[in-house]
Image (tube, rainbow over all chains, first blue to last red; front, side):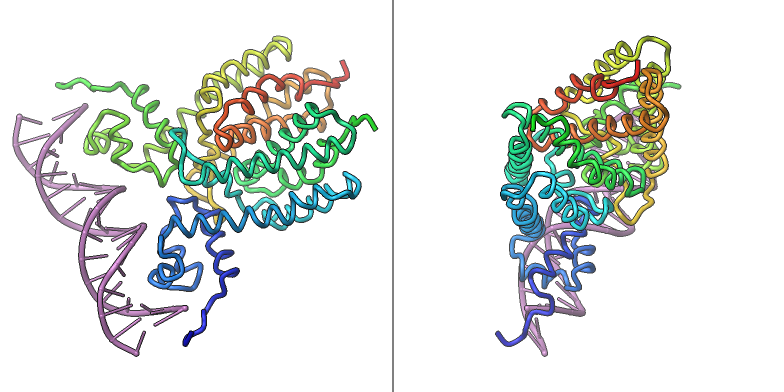
Length: 191
Length: 191
DNA sequence: GTCTATAACAGGATAGAC
DNA sequence: GTCTATCCTGTTATAGAC
């Protein structure tokens, strides 16, 4: 390879990710993506021959991989529930920039007349996250059904707080969510 | 006026609203808007001289007016809290088609580098809704601070459940939210 | 008020030089 | 691997007939 990459893959995906999260799939024009990445449109096509769709696919895949490593897997460990949740809250705060950045699961979600190109991945991501939270709730003493209900509520609060933080232009709702996460999921546990 | 309108204003706004909610602002092309409304592009411009931006403005204004009449005002009445919430839940179920349609507050929300053209209206809408729920919680016996926290959580759950319903392709999360709304907001009240 | 036709532009995507 | 220049399609918006 004669000429080295001017932006490494990981960095490139991160920069593209910002654009998709800030503007949505339709709003992310190649001009914006090129500017944010520091590459020209043609260079982007060299890295992503299938174009914008592929960029979004890889951005989403990277986000899901991050989630797996930083949220799902840690939640499955055998540390005490509250401890795991505190650690995850810290990671989430960084991932969503304190509520200033949207979630791809929301931004890339299919319109009503689905399924869109991302539906399967998004659906799987929701299920995995719910499952992971539910496991923690069960570990804390809730029965299967109650644990799942708690987990779903936690995921709703996560996404709702992100929507509200953007809508209000304030990081407070998201910060509150993180602060209450452990209590919302675990309070009233049998043991 | 020689020729009558082929679609009355209210109906027109409703049809345009569907497109914006399903595809977002950028995704709502004039071709889609024309098809959904049954008018030609040129006719849309006759009704909305300022173009797509004006259409979205009016669609958003109509949604906020609906919210005022069907949610905010009823919540301020002096019926029993649980009764008011049950009535509002029914209205919300219709408004969001059982969770199948997204919320404009989410879909038109400003990207990170705000403020966008809708930011002010969206922010005001969130505040009004939180305020209305908080009043109900206070009416049920919570102090100001606790009532506000409950109200914020209810609004987060509303939007979170909508995001999740779209993501999972299931109306269940939204239906659960509605079923639990009264309990989430009021359980543990002093009186 | 509504339409067909079209202008003016931006978007995604490609060619070919370096 | 990256770039400039270009193509082509779809998008916003307007003109002018009915």
